[in-house]
Length: 220
Image (cartoon, rainbow, N blue to C red; front, side, top):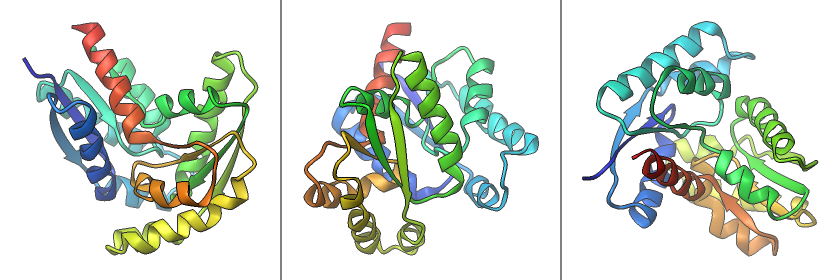
């Protein structure tokens, strides 16, 4: 019997990369998309993640659970505390978009670079990375570069320019042990970034799908 995985999206540009990852790594899973793109619009306007927005996010996740979810995978990296709240509220695995990628990056070394395109996510992602590094007993350090104009190009349908802009900043992190592409949407630039640097380049969708599969199968 296939497992139903609800994908919680706050922006449509995250949808195709994670669907591709499921097709490649877990095609037997039944994926269901829940999108509220007002969440990313409102998150971009707010300096902090408000209680009202956390409640909106959790309500969306509860709706996904009631649809029969065996697991919930969040594809937007700007809602860390809301994801924690949702995970505490539900009896099925709820996975943050980047935790599996963080683990893979730290396995490469202690100096980790990250290329991000959505500024509101950087604070929560940095906190999550530092927390994960601490739990792992390491002292990994994260350096993040923001490619602010890239996401607007992607939302406008110009993935080629998005990829070029992201890859153009990658050489600034060439001396690091690994480079993470911060968002599911940024994973489109992986090939271009790998052409620009010789260090390992990690993306979130593939790592997240593999982790979600392991969690769901372990709970079965």
